Image (tube, rainbow, N blue to C red; front, side, top):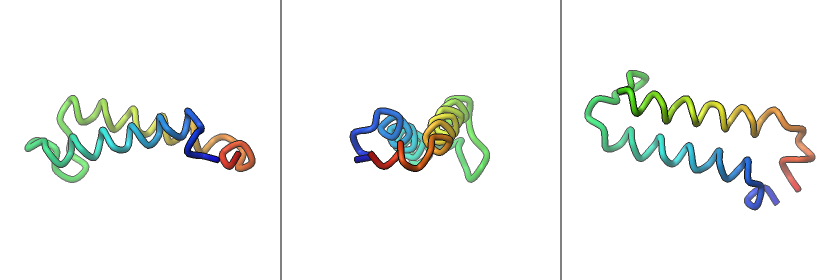
Length: 61
């Protein structure tokens, strides 16, 4: 099951961290991000790419 997959968990944690930061940061508006917000977004993108690049059968174990 995907929820136990560490790559999926890292992907979801990065999404949550980015979302939480964006909601609380006055400097992050739309696609414009502060330095910390940009780092969180980049971490999210990398985690998402790692998750999506694996074959579907590996993602759905």
